[in-house]
Image (cartoon, rainbow, N blue to C red):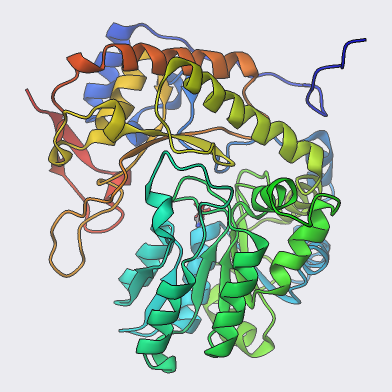
Length: 460
Ligand SMILES: *Cc1c(COP(=O)(O)O)cnc(C)c1O
């Protein structure tokens, strides 16, 4: 008897047409976009892997919940439904809704950080680093060195290096370190997870030095999935039990709900301390909105409450992570090098290994991103030296160890057939890689978070 193959735990109720284009059209469009994929119109893109943020499909339950949204300015029942979900799932009694993750960072860092402070973490996400550096503070990266070796197969490759963290904690006065940021999963290091053991040991170190632990939680559910499937002792626990245990170690959480919350917009900051909540409240009111809606409408809070509940069920996460792994497996077949093992939300193609002859000053990962767009209308995103920005003090370009092309897979949007198209396009570029000998130079850049608006010109 044949074992039945695996299938998604849902069926599709509504579809959205995809536009296709010719290579000539794409050549003109990308030139007009100054070789910055953020500047393309979405109808110039066939398969959009720019991000998995806010691009997921909501379920019928989420759409139904939107109809029960309460749009009262203060004390809306939608707020209380979300508050209950946050308290049950994460055990955090105090929370402030915000319009997205970076807004949560803005609110909490306004309350926590002062000029000159030091914020250690495992590869701070770009907006997190932006908010830290904007306040003239320092983000110190304490990620394990193994994260930089794209070919090493480690189950938890996004972890905090405890020795590096302890050095920062020991060498600086307590009042200069307002918090430690632990990002789960570690987006910048390739969507790689952090083990429960590392979460616990990081928290214990923080407690020993009296520093609060802030979890940057965009992909908390995917991290819990990896703990369940890879860490000893967790196989029989539910995702919800694992999430609760993860957050028992945290004092504060910021979250972009656009990822594992499976909503198109939203976020929040939650915490254990009422005192900190009271401090943060004023910044919510100034930057976001009154404390019971912050940056969200009532219907959005209801859709998020359902999204958080649904996406902490094993089947949802299993489907998604298997799809990401399928892309990795196909790239393996075709010999295309990527950050191993496959991450939770994306495959990160190792651009330095695909284009070894391109100098780093010509933006290797960006060059590969443009090539993939030209090849098949697929929009990925550069995670390399354009994203890394300039050093805030020396103003020199920063060249990170990794030049990656991120192919982020939106939740419940594309089928495995789309995945096969993506893999084939990568293979075609890999096969003609010797012909790609020049990259790009910058003609315009903003002083902070330049990658969103950078303009480039092709080096000839
Ligand atoms: C997306 C993300 C953020 C920022 O959230 P936005 O909703 O995009 O503002 C912060 N940290 C991590 C790890 C993220 O992935």
